[in-house]
Image (tube, rainbow, N blue to C red; front, side, top):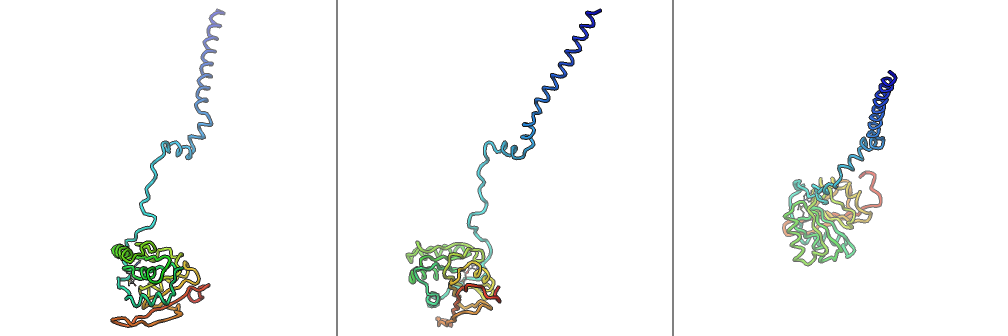
Length: 231
Ligand SMILES: C[S@@+](CC[C@H](N)C(=O)[O-])C[C@H]1O[C@@H](n2cnc3c(N)ncnc32)[C@H](O)[C@@H]1O
């Protein structure tokens, strides 16, 4: 009888022990450290980042190539007018000249070749004209000092310019005006063939006789402060 009771007690204690042991095992698998890591997005990201994914290739180049239509058609400025524009702007070897809508590159190339400009940049939306400008620069021997970029003149960074030349349209000049005031340094000279800048009155206006007609060249300097009426 006593032996039977002892045997039952033994069976009972083995059962409880195994229950305790099973519980311990379960507790061990749900280690708090593991839980923290599993619920952490950082940790998941780190885990999935092994091995590291391929470097993403940008879908747009650093300088985006515009595919918008030109805002104005190509009409070249006659050489006699080009010379007058550069004379009026007093271009020297210290200047960085930007032609916005540079066509075949003639203004920038003449500035580098005849006036010794340190650097010339032509901004042109038409890729064929950009290519033609590069070929013209090569022929003129100034490729090392000029740069023709296929860009939209309304998004180009103008900050390094000391002279800006334009042959656009009156409404485009006015549209461009806030950008000129924002990005150009005080003292930067601007010359425009045939078209003014609306309420921004020019400092000089010069007439030039061309083969077919009389041309007008307008001249401005970026002031220290933008006049109240032009803000
Ligand atoms: C009237 S032509 C002047 C060309 C050159 N500046 C000259 O005086 O001989 C205007 C030029 O601006 C270019 N153009 C028009 N819209 C433009 C834009 N948004 N950005 C850059 N170039 C543009 C045209 O393709 C054209 O070559």
